Amino acid sequence: MHSKKIDGSFKSYSFVIGLGLLVGIITRLTDFFPYDDLWSFSSIATLFGFWMLTVTLIIYFSSSNKNAAINVLLYLLSMNFSFYFLKYVLGSFIPRFYDEGFQWNLFILYNVFALVCSAISYVLYYWNKENKLSNFLYALPVSGLVAETIGISIYLYNNHTFLFQLIFDFLSLIVLGCWFYKKANNKLIYIMTIVAVSSIVYFVVYRPFL
Image (tube, rainbow, N blue to C red; front, top):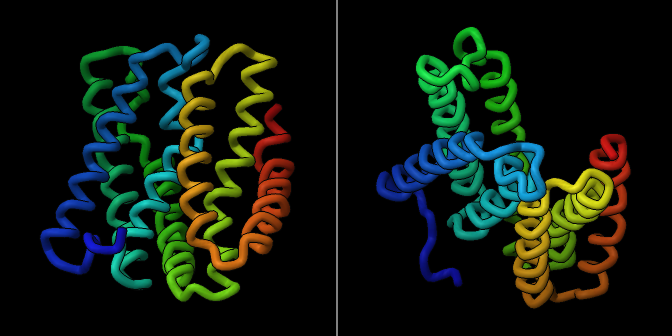
């Protein structure tokens, strides 16, 4: 799995930027789907599961702590740009996207969030040290997916929407959870961290909205 790295070359950085631009365009175009029906395909851009999965994969396939931080920053910045720029362009032709100009407030907010994620990515890359800390770090993105899966399950039951997001989060949880479980050298620390962190994230982030 480590044979192909997103290293610090111009080609790899161009790939990450292109990927971010493409993802921003695709997630913006999902807004053409209804938001409040059973499947709610547009929820992929508004909830965290998709971003947790893609950012985790970018970190994993990076070549160093610094490289992981830069890759994640480039990915999220380029995604933010295409996401909000496309909305601005579509707003010139389609009334549902019109919002009185470019959404600078949200664009700046999520770029600040991208900087925070970049710093976190630098730390998460230490899971490659294969020590006790790595078991804790492997568990963090999985914990986020556990918390969101629980939250979305309850929301789906109560409101009959977000089915697509639930399926995506659940499949991502299974794949990422099993993958990192195999890599963890201390399964107990890994599992206990997931239980503790996912509980905290659920009650702090998701429970207030249910």
